[in-house]
Image (cartoon, rainbow, N blue to C red; front, side, top):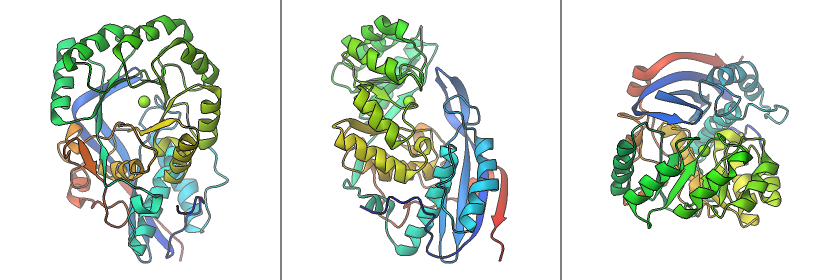
Length: 372
Ligand code: MG
């Protein structure tokens, strides 16, 4: 396994970093307990070194609903603190918080490094799978018939896991309807994005009869002890997403019995190397791990797919084809092959970026240059 260090270890000097804010329309609006959106905003990070180029994607949201970090805040963090550190050859060890911003720059620098050394990201991370299982998350809908139809269509497309977003008032009956539609053999999960409290334990326990893979983030992110109390009252495994922002917290959550599954997203934990450490903690703790998603474009998706090739990711997560989100992706489209996505074997993130789509979807771009 490769270095776990946080160094901005580019092979040649970093010459420029371009920050590109893009907006892609979603094929259908996506609603969670924390809000709804009809388009995907992302900040692309394009690193140019003396001998290679690399791409990263900041998966923070425009609003502070999922995490406290926002896309505009991440842009300023990158512009004023992280990119200047990288130009000076420094790492980000003294930077607290700002996980999504750190992850985006780390990804771009690592992609450039791996492009220069002709190694795939999956191989660098220690990936062992040629393909990874695909899953899909379905947002909250007002119309139960629409939800059943969508779930059946995704299942027919080959998705190996269907995850439903839930919130108080749109939970037990919703899951019953989808379970009835799909039958008992389909892997079904729910995600509350922290919308419940311990007082709702009996409602959450009513989900036990649907044999769900997991109930993800039922309680707010910092409610670690409450999650471990809730775990005693459910047979459904609890998965943690928003709560787990580092490998240290993952280890504590597992020790407390707060979760039996960890949803790992590189942006939330500050990068692909920390995500690898969270994976290692899960493997050591006999805890299931899966790869989540932030509706990433093809660039961020490539990082997620490479991570999902690691041996501890034994359960299908939220990795979907490009068509689930976008009419046209920033990269060549990710496609489903018998319910799987292929892990790229080319250097770096292993996908190519489409300048024409970036030009069409860019809202703003700025280039930062190293002083020479
Ligand atoms: Mg989640």
